[in-house]
Every structure is written in structure tokens, then in C-alpha cells.
Image (cartoon, rainbow, N blue to C red; front, side):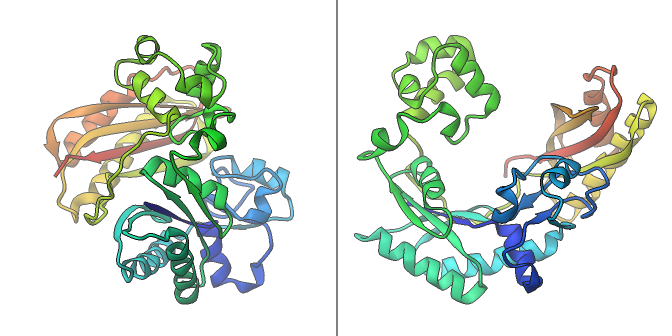
Length: 337
């Protein structure tokens, strides 16, 4: 299995559109105005050297890298570039599983995956002028993690043979799917490194994390993952809308009104798909920067804006109202096909 990950994809697309930005710290996000509220969608490698990365506030990015060039996000341009890359990948004798704008899994039958990876890199670069890194693995987990060792524009192999050597002395946060909160909870339980987690008792972790997540964490640490690549066309699992307010909302009625509006806008977004929503989620970011999300399954799959709006407002009532609100978002998750 190969994992293809486009290097600094969104920033790279912007630098193709604006060649004068090549090599400069570029930050993409929001309306492209770092004096306004918004978060970083992506940052070029040059900007990352200053501690700028996805998800931080634009204002923080400006403080860390005042010389950066800030640009607004242009999703249509990134979708077009992504489609171009996918066409190149499908020109090879591989199974292509798209998992996002900038990354795919490839299933290949080859005795020399490194050579295939370099051929793919060369073809992508020649036809799209974009660089990619490729991870090689014996399952999707190892291929995905291998890519990080190959960045930028490199190739790396991670399999059962070198898993312990490469991963065991790394913190659990290095595992794909383990976030900051989970890694901290694992550390509190004495599981600091991947080797510690790999030796853990799945039943003990099941008592701490639940019957599914606990054993899954041990499997992650052992490098176990999916061994098949799915060639079905990629379709989004959800649609979402969110708004960052330049001034915090302090009245809950205003928050409710914004959630209702976003719910209807999301329904309008998905109407053309004809795929009903099965679950609605609401995200609220409180001042200064605390974010919480709640969701609920709909009574039955629907595209009725009134029903989605009502469900989103019901979910909103689960949030506390103590702090001013700086961002709200609504996500509609599709029913399985």
C-alpha cells in the first residue's frame, strides 16, 4: 500500500497561482485578513518554521510570523488541483482510494514499491507542478505514518519489519488517530511511549476508554491496520458551515439565530446531492478559544431544512451559556448509502 500526501497542498496551489510567493511564508485561512478573526487552514513550510500551523488563530499566526503573506481560502481552486492529481494517480495500474483533497491510498501489486512511488512522484510533478510525499506500508496505518518520515517530497517504507525500531520509542501522540487529549490520558495512566501502549492489556484500556476504543489503541501501537484499499469513488461524509464573529456574541438568542441560519445553509448545500442527513452536529467556540461540539442523530434521514434547523437548535441547548461566543458551526452528516 502507498499513501500519497501532497506537500503543503493548499499553500502550494496558491504559490502556483502566485509564483512570486515561492519560498515565502504563506498562510491561508479565513478572509485572508490576519487582523480579523479566523483560523489558519494551512501554512507553507516556510511559515511553519515560525510555529504557524493549521488551526491556530490568524492573529496568532501574524504575531509569530509578521512577514507572512496572508491569503483567503479558495476551495474551488483546491478542488480543481486535487482532481488533476487524482487523474494522474489513476493513470497508473493501482487502486485509488481518495481520503481527502490532498491524500490518497493506493493499492499496488509490485516487487519494487519504491520505484513505483518515485514514478508517481515524477508524473504528479510533471503534470501538475505539485510535489508529493509517499509512504509505503503493509497496511493503511503504516503507509500513512510512513509519509511523515518522507516529507517533503520523499519516499519512506514502514512495515512490520521496522515498526518497533521506528515507532516504539516515540510518544503515543505520534500514532495516527491519537490526539492530544487521548495521549495525555494515556500518559496519566503510565503509557508514555508507543512501546508502553503496545504492551498494554486491552481489557484494562477498555475499562478506561470503552470496549471499542481501548483495544483499538493497543492495535494502533502494534501497527495493526486495514490491509485493503477501497476503490469506490470518494464522496464526502458530511457538509458543514461555520461563522467566526468579529465581535463575540453575548446574547444566546443571537447564537440561536446564527445556528438556525447555518443549518438552513447546510441543507441548501446538500440539496443538489440528494443525500439525506442522518446526524446533525453543532460546534461552538467560546472566548477566548475553547471549542466544544455536540451532535444528535435525526429521527429519520431527511433534507427538510425545518427539521434540521430544529434538531440543530435542540443540540445547541446542550451547551453552557457562561461565556461569550466567537464561532458557531453546523455539520450535517449523511446517511449511509
